[in-house]
Length: 266
Image (tube, rainbow, N blue to C red; front, side, top):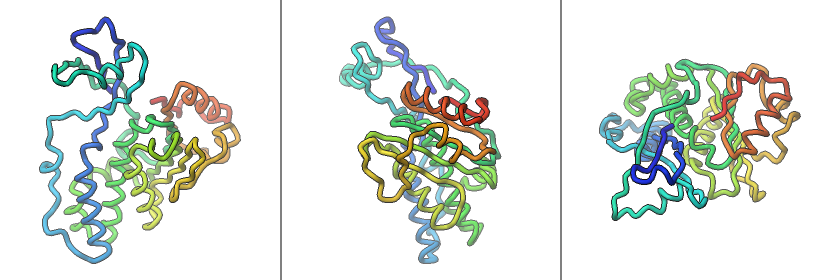
């Protein structure tokens, strides 16, 4: 994450902690990989040219996602309402923090509990896992074609071990609040279709609406739920949401007998 402030009025606004989400700039890359993969798997059609990352990802921009909170002196409100014509300047310091504490070659089950915009810190991870799954599926057919379509596939194979798996439990107010649905949905569909035990998502909407594809969770995330759904050998449990969510989820996990050291507040 980055520390973010206004260079002109630092005494008015509290310092804001903002996360960088790289995958918001990679929609084009995901589209190219998906199209080339499906053309090859379904029609045995080879890509005309290899996908070259530098042609797509070279940029001087730093993508930040900042949700607007309407507090009187809220800094996110100040950013959203800044007069662009006056070209406001902001002070950014970073990168900071331990990140997700995920080491290269990680294996085993990793669980994510998020609410609302709490999914932001995990979108880059899920995007990388999606590309790894594409590469893994293509490897089953032809390694050379896999390298053409997912140029950093070998790096992703090393980054995630052969038994690395993510289970996402996400809660949103309603369907339009599901940021990153395209990444999560594609990852879930690929893993189901090609029997890759890399990912599973369970989605809950406060409005009571059920998603047409994902498994829906209606039970409370209490001690009983944790005992029934979290494997004893879980590697990490990431939690990110509202203050109440960040307090309740770790309490339920700890009361179910899991090691608190495995819980990472993001």
